[in-house]
Length: 69
Image 1 (cartoon, helix red, strand yellow):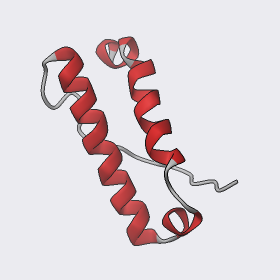
Image 2: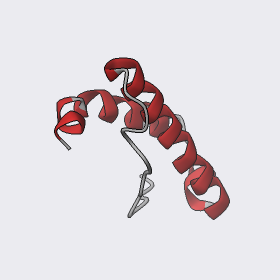
Image 3: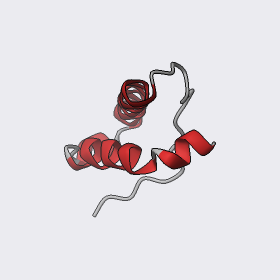
């Protein structure tokens, strides 16, 4: 948990970058949301591994709410 807290800005940047490139259809479609979740997991794992040189720090990603504005 401490490792994640230390690198929280890096992870927030990754999530914001991915979410900003999505459109309404992606967020509303269940299958596309799952794809987005997988992309987010992969991006977070890649960034945290590059920063810490440790694998499998992040095991999964859970989105509890999707809001389109």
